[in-house]
Length: 194
Image 1 (spheres, one colour):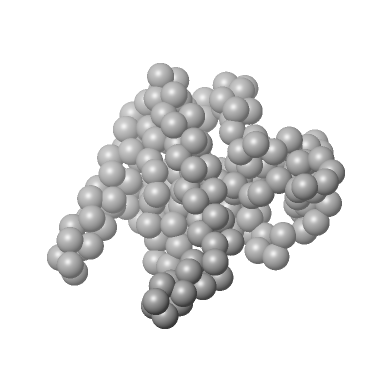
Image 2 (image 1 turned 135 degrees about the vertical axis):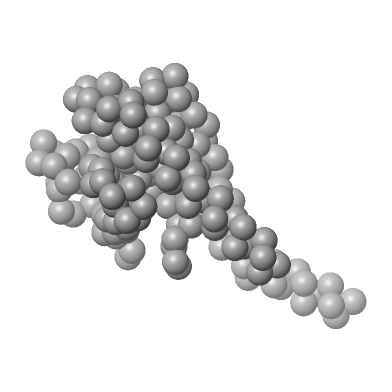
């Protein structure tokens, strides 16, 4: 009986963390399904790319460039508007600044991927960081789109459609091949450690 009370206490104590993880997982899954539709527009899509002590939720490689996608699935506020505002420097969710800034995270991921592709291919590809907020209304200033995009997932397709072609089909294949090879090598290393 004591172990049952202890288990119940542990679950209740960790329930907020469990809920948060489930919310994040469902958000990444929904975004991943949406990104899959971009294959019809010439994009290669990768999910859950693992780095040294981080992961990149999604990567797109296509005519408009290479994009790292960071998904942030946050609980909406009980009161007030579920609005994300981004002015190019400061990101606010329903008026508050998050403790861990997803803008810094997204830029670091894009930088890492650009170095990885340059080392592997010998070419420098433009890598653009994107932060997606499923279920939130996202308000950007004009200046906010200079270094990265902060968007609601459904807006991404429209943004990509407006971009110029910066990578040839051959270079899309080259970058896709090298990133696929990197992922396969990671998977082999993971299996060898098991």
